[in-house]
Every structure is written in C-alpha cells, then in structure tokens.
Length: 392
Ligand SMILES: Cc1ncc(COP(=O)(O)O)c(C=O)c1O
Image 1: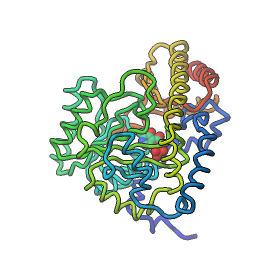
Image 2 (image 1 turned 120 degrees about the vertical axis):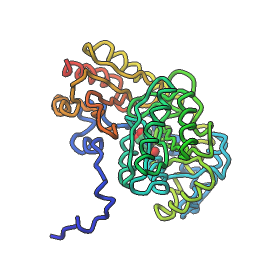
Image 3 (image 1 turned 60 degrees about the vertical axis):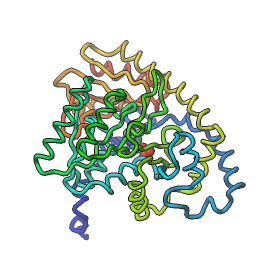
C-alpha cells in the first residue's frame, strides 16, 4: 500500500477538518433535532420559478448557456448585480460561491505566516481557508465600545508588526454574523476601515446573510465606506439556493484583475447556465418576491426559538438576539464544556455546533451555535425543549 502522506504538500499539514461537516457524516439530519448546520430551509427554494426561468434561458440563450463563459462571469449577471447594488460593472466578479470568494482573496493576498485579523468567534469555513494557506490568524473579540473595539485591533496589529509579521487583511462578517448572529454597528465598521487604512491592510467583508433582515434598519456596508480597500463578498446561497454555488465579489478593479487571473487556474469560469438563471431570477423580480417570503418564514422561526429559549432554559444561560441571518449563539455558565456535552446531546437526539470551534485562538468552551432556519417551527419547539431539559 502506497504511503501517500509523503506526497502531500506542506499546505495540507495545515488543513483541518470541519467539525460541522463531520457531524453531517455521523448523523442523518432529518432523523434528529438538528440545530447544527447552516442550511437554509428547503421551503425557500422556489422550484416553480426555477423551472420557468431555466426553460426561458434555454429558449432565449440556447447553446451558449452551456458553453464555457468569461472568467469574470456572465455579463448579464454582472449587470444585474451592478444595477441592484449600485456598483459599477468593472467592480463585479462572479464567484463559484462566497466560500470560493474567501479562498481566492486569501490565495492572492496571504503568504505563509502573513497575518489575517478576524473577529473572534468567526466563520469556520474562512478559518479553514486561512489555515490552508498557512496564514497566521489572530482573533479580536467584539467590544460594544467603538474606542475599545478599535484599540483591540490596533493592539493586535502592532503586536504582529513587532514580531516582524506582515499584515494583510481584516476579515469581517458584519451582518448577522456566523456564528454569533450579531451585527456590527456603523461606527464599528468605520473603525475597521480606519485600522485597515492605518496599517495598509485590505478588508474582506463577507456578507452572505445581509438581505435576510427580520427587524431593524440596514447598516451601510463596509464596502460603501471605502470601496477601494474593501472586498465585499456576496452569495446566492441564502437568498436563492446554495446548490447553485454562485456568489460575487465587489472590489477595486486592480484587485479584481488578480482574482481574475487566479480564478483562471481554479475553475476557468463560474457555472454558466446557473449564472443566466441567477440573472433571470434577479431581473424578473423572483429574487425580491422570494426574499419577502423567506424573511417572513425565518422571522417566525427566529421568534419561536427566542420564545422557547426564554421559556425553557435554566438560569445562567444567555443568548444573542439576531436581527437577521440563520443563527443565534448560546452562552452557558463558566466551566461548561459544550464539546464534552455534545455526545450526550446527540445520543438524546439533538445536535448543535460547539462554539469553541469558531474561536481562532481558543476559548468559547461554554458556548454553542444554534441554527433556526433548517427545521420546521414544531421541531424547533420540541428540539429546544429537549436541549433545555438535558442542560438542566
Ligand atoms: C459567513 C459565511 N461566509 C461564507 C459562507 C459560504 O457560503 P457559500 O459558499 O454557500 O456562498 C457561509 C456559509 O454558511 C457563511 O456562513
């Protein structure tokens, strides 16, 4: 039997497996109460709209919809995004989902040992990507006071510089963060821009949940504060369907040009037929209609989960109140270990993701992420009741 390990690249030694994906391998999500995944509800996939638009694309575009396409993406889709979000066409690059957006940004910016500053906790898929390029990832905790928030980023950046490191970018999920569900206030966004300018860094603004807002006012994007130092990542996964694997990057044309070259070696071009379908989905109003329905559905599920937590959770447990997105974050009493508790919960039929997986520098052992989009309202009720009884 050949020993393949000797052949694997140095990068592979920094890869780590997603504990979230491993959970999916261990259990049938439909057979348990699963608060673990980040899956949208299948009820939000408008199959009839897809059928109509797909057939319209075949009639109108014909064989071209199945040919290789431009690396930047299909012009029709780039134009639709440019119009919808008020960003000029040369600043729009289509990606094969925002996970690829994260990966391609890291690939063009980070050499081994280069520093990426990220919120702590942060999105696991991004941490996997950063580590796979052997970047030096440093987490910065949120602080509701903008001065202290900025000072923490400055302190972390200065410490890295003093070690002779190179600073590359700040990674932020400002809208309904995964995993915490929290939204970064405008002043904090301005402070991130100030830190990035001061240290000559870029900002990667990852915002796949931005349009799933259930209450409160929308906060301007970091990209709108400084479009020349921000790479804004969007995704069709949560507003259309994740199976299309489509997303976008808004950014300065000089940076997008490097991404363009990089993507030539990654996938040549994003999926062409899917892009025509996404363009049709935006242009004929299906996206806005579907968003309205998805928002109503998710708002209700979020409210049910919040209400059930209030009713059932023992003293000493607190949680975030997300204004949008798919997750909320539970904090249990100091000393609780949500990784160790996991098997007990799973044996009883309820799954969550242990919060510590999202902390790049350790910590968060007494936290867990709960998803409220995937299960039906009734199963959310039953699942929270079960989780609370186990915690008691
Ligand atoms: C913050 C964040 N970024 C990116 C992604 C990846 O999304 P996709 O690749 O489906 O666009 C996710 C998925 O859950 C996410 O939560």
